[in-house]
Image 1 (cartoon, rainbow, N blue to C red):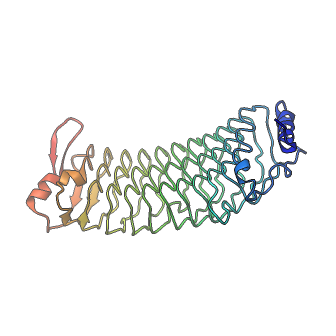
Image 2: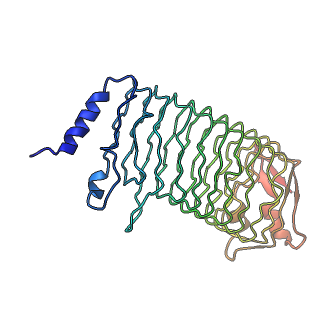
Image 3: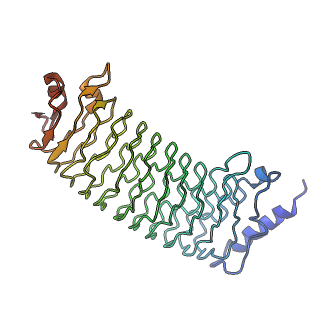
Length: 360
């Protein structure tokens, strides 16, 4: 089988850095060229895991990357380069061609780069499925995220993007207005020092699972970003702030009046510092919409909700499963005078941690 010049260059490129301490003058424009239609399949995985586990690699700042990227091109490229401190510039603004999107482009590209403090800019305003998935996960030294200017976000674009970034304190500008399935799912899970979210969840129309567990385990977050959404989707806010044990400040009202299945399920569960939950103005409730929403909020003092009816065929338990389980027995509830005695009885009671039935 004949080996192409491109394959030879690829091998030489790899061998030249295996024992390198720092890439300074090595340019890769001839290899990371733009992807044309004929080479689209060949470009897949072209730099997949290229520098994986190279603990001696310190700088990749002079590698030249294309403005147009293809499927899975840079998948895990620098994963576990534990001493990398200088990332390359990533100028790509195009994640598609005339026929389709290119997916998984920077998938887990810098995962495990524990000394990387400054992330490269990400200038694209329209991105593709899973393009930034896990990109900076477990980058323990990262302090501030790059701005995320994309207004249209596809499926799982930011899934796990900053997962486990232990020292991350600030999320930079986020402008996403059009979301898709799992767009921001688990984006900042276990970012234990995150305190500034800069209007992170600003979309007004949501998609299924789009903000699921976005800030799960962010144990120093004290103020939730403002949530303006009025059009919800199934599980859109499921577990969004679960385990944010220092959270004390949330908006007065969650503005949506038309709910979707499991939309707020476990949204503030285990927020043990929260004293006043946001008002819940929806009049008609659906399956799982408030399930576990304030579960184990051990300092909760007051909740206001206005509902009058429950979806046909459902019992209150189907809507409110464990919604206030574990809250203090003296927590006050304000609810509509139009509710029947039966619904009140089956909604405003729960078992405390000692298995005592508490009626509200």
